[in-house]
Length: 257
Ligand SMILES: C[S@@+](CC[C@H](N)C(=O)[O-])C[C@H]1O[C@@H](n2cnc3c(N)ncnc32)[C@H](O)[C@@H]1O
Image (cartoon, rainbow, N blue to C red; front, side):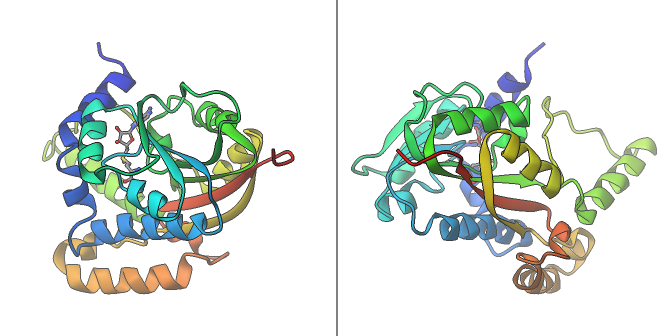
């Protein structure tokens, strides 16, 4: 039987050419979610500089922006096909480099990066804390981590799951066979893991305030409400848990090198 890592790798090998078009290009709620998290990550990157590791880089979502911000990006991914496609999309960028590696076993020395970006990748790690600890290991003291996690408390995906389970129980839908599981945490539990990995959380912002059932029948209205939800709740202390995902900026403890 194939392992979680092998299944994730072959999923993204096959998805590499479609990933950017499906998730980012287009005016649907899905694409707005992905673009929202990118927007938050780029805002969180303001004021940072230096050598930056982008783990789970996918098809070079951040590579060009990192270069334009004056960073020296090192883009890493488990999927070779994703990396090949990423290199083509990014084109020649001075100072950029590429690595085929896993988030829990990074082939870099301790304290070798000023910043680490890990967006959309922790979900696939076998253990979130060990992945965060590995990310903290390669960060310099005082360095910045910008990462992302799916929110277990968000009501919309829970309702969708419930509906899918009911349809499966009635024999009206097959159970999807991805061959891998995806980890998610409540924001409070994730911030605790960040802290345990030796990082100090500085900021957290939520995104993807989706309305799945409305999305299906009235996509235009769902998108408009979602945009209002994003503006109103992304930074809210009270309603952030309505978002399907959140972004976290953290600093590695210790004095800067
Ligand atoms: C959901 S995509 C995220 C891509 C991009 N960072 C973004 O924000 O859109 C996940 C990416 O992480 C990679 N990936 C999945 N598991 C990984 C692991 N254990 N180590 C490194 N990369 C992994 C996949 O190959 C894929 O390119």
